[in-house]
Amino acid sequence: MHKNFFRALIVGFTTVFIDFWFHFFLTKPMETFTYFVIKFLLAFFIATGLFDLNSFIKKHYKSIGTIIIAALIFSTLMSTYYRAWELFEAYAPLGSRAPNIYGIDRTNLLLFSGAWWIGHASFFVIGAFLAKRLIKEKKS
Amino acid sequence: MKSLIIKAPVLLFGLIIISGCANSQSTQPQEEQTSSTQESTTTTQPTTEQSSIIEISDFEFSPSTLETTIGTSITWTNKDSVPHNIVTSDELIKSPTMNQRESFSFTFDTAGTYSYICGIHPSMKGEIIVK
Image (cartoon, rainbow over all chains, first blue to last red; front, side, top):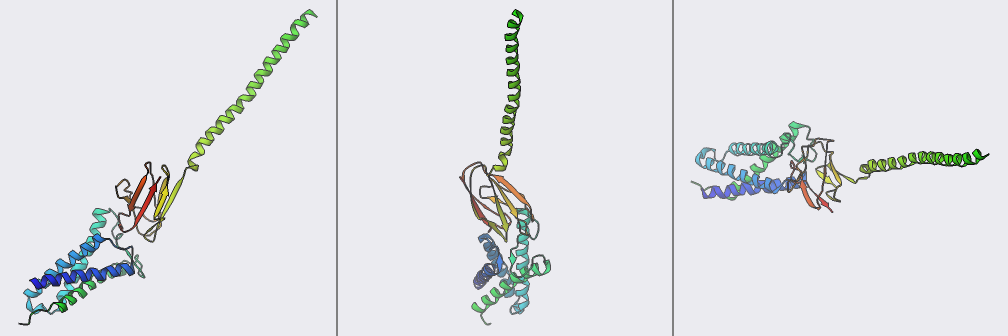
């Protein structure tokens, strides 16, 4: 349990770290501090669930499948956050909050939203693998 | 002859009065013209009123900082394909969403420094300094 907490912290920090530089170099405009805090909390809590579940279901522990599913859930919830912002905070049309990604036409909805979805998911996957590598499970 | 001596000054007096009236009638339109000029000067004042335009393009306000005076109308024009709006930190302004090529105007009547953001993209920031 203690290990899972630190693993989840690593996932949260790694996800936000990669995402920050992704936004810094490849998107415009830069995202806000609040956005990164929400991203960290979301990644942390989903990672906590992922590692606790993996500890419980031993046979799935080494499976990449659970990490990918957790990453996709994380990415979907980030998209939900965007949509919630547009609907309730800014009263703006759906899809207007996401920053531009250099080299990707935002009018191509499939490519644009897909890039965001896969991008967010892959940052989480990198974080999860790094956490597993840094804090290893005791061999039984 | 006697009557002529009496009639001549009367005629002359009459002519003077008539000519005087004629002069006063001819000067009246001039006065009217003057006043109409003043009116036209008054009506043309709004066009000489100061106005400033801030363009929104590529997720940036241009200029990002604008110095202006009280009573100057400021117009934000969205040239992005993405919608934007204007929200000041004190919520004095909370514009409706501006789609592409749409504008929003506001006139500041109090001096001060007004920071604003795009409510949809909060990292887009601008500042109006009203003097």
